[in-house]
Length: 579
Image 1: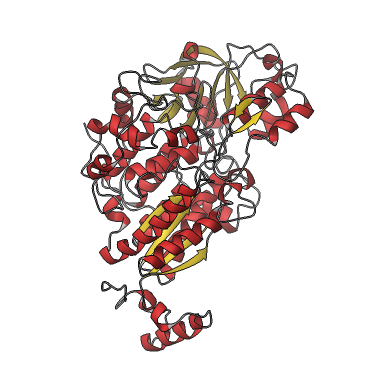
Image 2: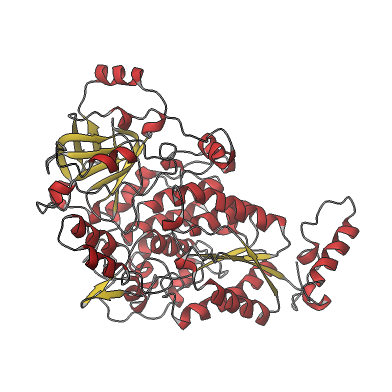
C-alpha cells in the first residue's frame, strides 16, 4: 500500500472516492476541500489513520478522550502517517434512554459506515464505557480495514469516611443500604460525589473492564492497555504507541478478519471466565463473533468454566479494584496463569502471536490480585450457563458473585410483568413476598423493554431489605451490570416478548434453580403451560411504526446471538469451540 516513507499509492486520499462518475475529478475535489483545512500535499500523500472521537459531554467515561487523541496523533506522525479524527456516536451507560444496549448497534453501524465511507488506511478505535468497545469492534470487524483498539481506562477509586469506594459495585451496595433505611438521604447524596472521583470507566470488574481485558486477550489491543487508569501518564504513552502501530498496520494490511477468529474468540471466552467477568461479555462477544461468521458454543463455554477458575480478586467477585490489577501487571499475569488453556498461535495487532506477547511480558512480581490456578477466588469459572423449560435457549448466572446457599434453591415465584410493574409494587408494604421466594421480571429482554436494560438486579423488596435480607434468587430476561452481585439469573431466552416460557410464569408457580447441574425449571405441567401460551399476546411499543425503534424491533436478535441486528451478521460457519 505504501513505501517506507509512508507515501500512499493506492490508499490514502485515493481510497473510497465519492461517486461522481469521474475518479480523477473525485480525487481533485476531495483534495481541494481538505486543503481548506490547511493540509499540504506532503501530508495528504501519507498513510492516513482515522481516529474515532468518542468524546461526549454526557460521557464521563470518555472525558480523557481529547488528551488521548492528541497522544494518538503524535504517535501517528512520529511513524510518518497523517492522523485524522472524526466524530462518532458515544454511548454512556447512565445517559442512554431507554438503554445503552438499545444504542449499541447504532454506534456499531456508525463506526462501520464511517470507516468505510471516509479515506483511511487504518483506524484507531477509542472505546471505554460498556457498549462502546463491542460497538467499535463490531463495526471494525464488518468494515475490515486495519484497526486497533485502545480504551479510556478505569477510574481511580474514591473514598467516604475512610472507606475505599468504587463504581459501581459500591453504588449498588450502598444504595441497597439506603433503601433499607441504614443510610440517610443526606449521606447517600454525599456518597454520590465520592463514588466516581474522575474520568474513566467503572473501576471494578464491570462490563467496561471485562471488555477491555477480553479485547486485549483477543489481540485487538496492544499489550498492557486494558487496565491502565484513565488519569495515568501511561495511558497517554500507550495511546501514542497505539497511533504509531496503526501506521504499521496499514502498511502490513493486517486486518480484523485476521485477528478476530474462532480461536481468538475462544481465548476471549477463557479470559472472561478467569477474570470473573461481566455476564454482558457473553452477549457482546456473541455479537462480535456474528460479524465474522462465528457462532459461540455456550456448552463449550461451560466446559471452560470447569477447567478455568476465577483468578482475579476484584469486586464484585473479590475485593480489589482495577488500579490494583494494573499494579499487579494487568492482563499479563492472568494470561501467564492460564497459558496452557489458551490457543497461543493466534495473531495480534502487534503482528506477533499471543505466545510471543506472553513471553515478552515483564517477569512476574509478588502480588495478591491475580491468584494462581491452584488457589483461585472461585472454583468452577465465573459464569455458568443454565438450561431448562424456563429458558430453553439458555440463561446465565454469575456464580462467583452469588450467595452459595442459594445456588440450589426451589421457591415460589413472585412475578413482575414489566419494569413499570416492578417500580410500582416492589416496595409496596402489602406485597406478598418472603425471603425464600423467587422474584421474576418479565418483558425486559431485547424486544420487551426494549433494549434489554440492566434491570436484572431486581431490588430486594423494601420490607425484606429492612429485615436485613441482602440477597434472593432473581430471574429475568434482562441484563445486569457487571458491577452488580447476587444470585441473579439473566438473559432467559427466548424472552417473554417473543413468547418465551419466562413470560408464562405466574405468581405462585414453583421454580427450581440448580446451578451445579446447570438447570432452571418451571415446575408447572405442560398442559397448563400450553394453555397459557395460547392466551399469550405480543407486546406493542408506542412509536414503533417508524425510525430506529422500528428497525431495532424488526431486526434485533436474542441474547445468545448477541442482540445484534440480523441483517448485519455474516452467515455463520459453526460453533467457536468443539469437543
